[in-house]
Structures are given as structure tokens and as C-alpha cells.
Image (cartoon, rainbow, N blue to C red; front, side, top):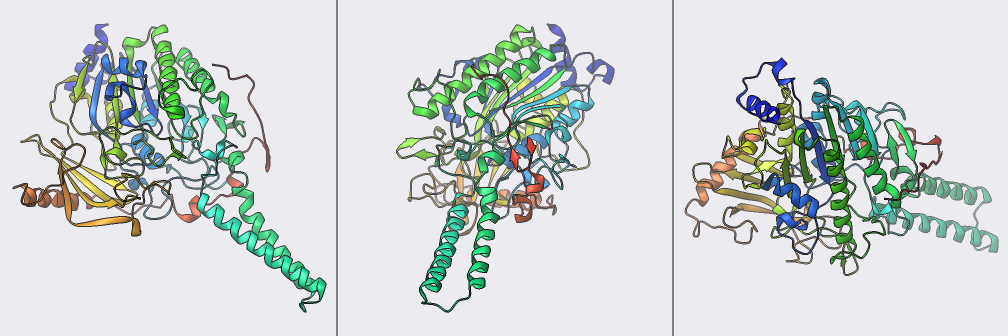
Length: 578
């Protein structure tokens, strides 16, 4: 049991020769929830939802209280997590329009020249598996090129959704993918149909002098228009809600009710197959994203409706995975991490029922790049005998820090040919350093800088400067109800001149903006952060935009398909019973 400790100290002091570091490599288990609010867990202050397995992980490990997502939405946050750098550096964020990938059959995705932590661990002899959600694209130019696929980004095994859960995956739910555009296109189709029928009726009754050829031609145009959009939007569930094993589609469309048990079965099986290690398992959970598919064993059991049921089922599933680690004798040799990709989704509602998470004392939520509620997430690290049990760290840290952390643990090096925004957390977690390596952190909404954070190390203060904030609807509501998420730009945001300033060390809820009258350092802080922003902007360079309209559009020749396109259909064996 002392070997992991010796290796950890060796890596920390950077005194090991490569062959010594290779003598022992910890297994790496990374668990990411989807849309989970930081206030949904017992270890972060929730006393009404039951999350005993995650709470125990925190009790036996290190818990971060100022852990921050690099983006407030799924696709860009995960791109930053995988690469250790802001998502706009790889074109995986939006300047306007779409802020996440919309289709499995789009051509946008994580570029092939990006380096993920999985690729580096693979090069250091690790088995690398991803189970669950990907949402980083699939193909570029043809159905089988798999240029954005996990197996092209360092993972040697993939089972899960290449896309993400949406309401469209549940036939009983209202549409979600481009719902406003879909409604608009349906309105245009009805208008065209009404016009064509009117012309046909007028011709038949002699009211109009219109040739039959003209009416037929207009009817053909109307049909082509309908087919052009309905071929994608009419079959969202079949095109997007699929499961894959490596390059093969195994369920199309997926059966939601058995998905959780399939993911659990795959995770446990992966651990058992690779128990002689070393392995990386990125368990990218589908919980707790809408439509909140929950098995009957957990339905109606929580105090917070369907969302609470889903959170408690997620904790149960995590407990089973951790049991598999322990049952295979891997607990002391496994570095485990738990987080969420961003804050809870406040606008997710069904009538008066809340279908999104709770972000505790923090303002804002999913989609908001500046306010804490959109980006402050759980951060729990666990490695018995190496990391101190029960330690709580309040220093600013980022999901992007996981990349250099795991790379250092396996004796690797981060790429030197590009900007890496993350810093290794090894010294901070072990206690060798008291302060985070981040002096400044920059908070983006799409490609728009909304806020910046300054960790003033000589005083311990954490200053937060907001340049742009979303306009809540209704005013003062804390969210943008009536739309999916708050916008990043345009008429729905307010640009602050001068910027808003908060001292998070005394006001983590961002409830009391400071002024020159209330804070003597106001002008000095604004100037110092402004200089850091200018310096940061010097590191930016143009890259191809993965969320451009041409990359976002559904392309039938890129659609993953089980069978012969467009008749794609298949289902896995098994009843999916937990």
C-alpha cells in the first residue's frame, strides 16, 4: 500500500526517472454528471436529497468548493475538459447562433489535431474507455470516417451516446432540438399548403385562371420544402437518440428505460476486464439531463419530484461502480474524480415542476458563463492512502485542470505546441501547495468574455469582474424563463460600463456589487483584471468554427445508421433490468 504514496511524492517532486514512474500507474476513474447543480449533493449542503455514495467519496477524499467549468453548456465544457484548454481554442464554441452540436449527422466536432488526456494515457500504456455521453461529433465527410469519434481521440473503447439526451428522445415529451425553428418551418409548410389548396379550389370552381401545370408545380415545390426539413426534424429521435459500441450502432432509436442499466453493466464489465490495469475509464453519465429517464425502483422516492428521483438513481449507479472498484481490489490503486459539466438547468420546467438542478447559494445556472451558478460545479478527488481524507479546498480550480493532473500522475507531459489553460492539481490536492496555480480565470459565454476572476494571492481575496450579464426574464427571476437558456449576446444581455465587481471571498452569492465608495480598491482591481484580460487576449488565434451553420446542419450522408439508410433500426438484446 505504500507504493502509491511513494510514486505520488516522486511525481510531485519530479525526481523519478521514467522507468521508476512506470513501476506503478494508478487506474484513473473520471465520473461526470450532466446538468447537475452543485447544491444537489449532500456533501455540498443539500439535506433533502440522498446522495450517500458521492458523500462518502467526498468524506474519504478531497472536496473542492470553488471548482469551475470552462463553459456553461455541454459540448464546449466537455471539449475544454478533454483537452485542458478553453473550447474556443479548438473552435468548439459559438460567437453567435448555435452553442452546442445539434445532430449526430453534423460535420462539426472536436478537431483531429486536438490532444485529449485519453490520447496521452493511451501512449503511456493505458487501456482507455469512455462509457456514456460524448457530444463531440462523429463524422466529417462520410458516414464511416469517424473523424470526431472517441476512438479517434485516444479512447480504445466506447459505449454510449455519441450525442446527448434531449426531450426528443422521449416520444411523450415536447420537441427540444431547434424547437423554435421547427415550429417556424411547420408554420411555413401550413401556409404553403393552404395557398396551394386555395389555388386548386379556385381553379376547380373557376374563380382563378390558373393552369393545372402551375398548381401541380406549386404542389411539388411545397412537397419538396416539407421533405427538406421534415426528413431531419421529423425523425430527431431516430437520428440523435442512438447507442454505439465503438464504431457500430447498437440501438436506433435507443430504449430509454434500460439505458441506465446498460451503462452500469458496461462500466462494471470494463473494470473487470482491465482490473490488472492500468486503465482510464471516463464514465460520462446521462444523468441528470432531461428528459430525466428514471427506473421504477426510484420513481416517486425522493422529496424533489422526478429530478430528485433521477439524482438519487445517479448516486446509486455511482455506488455500484465504486463497489466494482473495491470488489476487484482496486480501491487503493484508483484515482477517482467526480464532477458535473456545468451548473443546473434552471429553465427546465414542466408546468410548476422543476426539472433542473439547484445551484445552492450561487446566482444563475446552465448557459450563463459569468454567474457562479452556471459554472461552479462539484469537484471530488479520491485516492485512499495518497490524498488526505476529509480535506476541503476553497481555492479556484477548473475542469481544465484535470487534463494536466492525470497526465502528471502517469508520468506524461502536456503538449508544448499549444496553449494549455489548466494546471496540475497534484500539489494542491496533496497539500504541498496552499494556493491554486490560477491567478486569473476567464469566464466565457460562447466566444464572448462575460467575466474574469482574480485570485489575489497576497490577500487571499477572490475578485470577480462582470463585463456582460444576461437579462433575466421575468426581471429578478434569476433565470431566463420562457427560453431554453439565457443568451450570450444581443438584446438579451447587458454590457456593464463600468464593470460589476464582487468580492467572492465575502460574497459568494454575488449579491452585493462593490462601488468606488464601498471598496477603496475598486479602481485598482478593475485596472488589474483589465490588464490580465488584455494579456489573455494575446493568446487567442483564429481557428475553424465547428459550430458554423454549415457544420451544424443535418447531413444525411453523415448519419450513423444501423442497417440501410434511411431505414435505420436495431435494438440490443437484454431486458435492461437493473
